[in-house]
Image (spheres, rainbow, N blue to C red):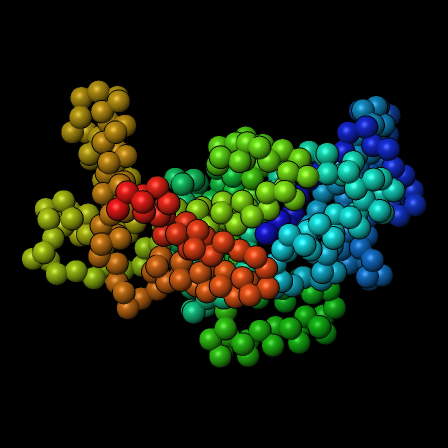
Length: 359
């Protein structure tokens, strides 16, 4: 679950010189006389001896604060891998870091953190790169598709970032040895020919406000992450349920309401993005006040989503296929780690326990 993270250790009591390798700060090299850049920078390499993966370590001499930044998953597995990090591996990795920093594990558990990536790799039934163009929205965040042809799609918000990318291609591209890189690409190409594809879905919570906004205000320290690790799976599955997938519609025109016709025909003529903008503006123009216009835009978007849910083409890849692919991945993980599968699968379909009880 947890991958990249930024850990802040206040009143650091350890020793960075035993395991960390000191490096010169680029800012200090460019500004040798500027005291505000007077802090020590180190790299904390993993124990593989290959020097491929390391955590960046910054020591602020004035505040006695040490900041660690990097991928815990890569440090844990010593390589770029399809494996995700369960709670047990997360704890083991953190204990190793505490030992290398020469601090008690309890001190590391008290550390605060930011920029926490929560993600997992899932096996998809079609090529992952073909899924990316179908993912049209997440939480109304800004969609950044500049790198979609290379296999990466972003949705950027004020406190969170969603990143989806073709994981098998990323592994091959980031293999250090050219010979091994070629071999890995060939191996993944063979798997793709057999219908085995991998997509990574990860959410970056940029700060504590992001945790608070998603009902996880109590997760403030590394120790809290350990104690509430299962909640990260809850968060991840709930957010996946908010991803909007649009490929094509399948309907009988005679069965459509007038509003559904307006939406279905508009989507097919203009495409998702242009139609959403024009339809929201059209609905807002029919109102007379700012608040009513705002509500009209929201209602318009809700109607579009309902139409997509009702008339999606079941013969092409759709959001339910994506959820099933995720569910299969969770079922596979549950054979090795303890997961509350019923709750996680309900999350994927946006079904709360309260709503189920009411029914």
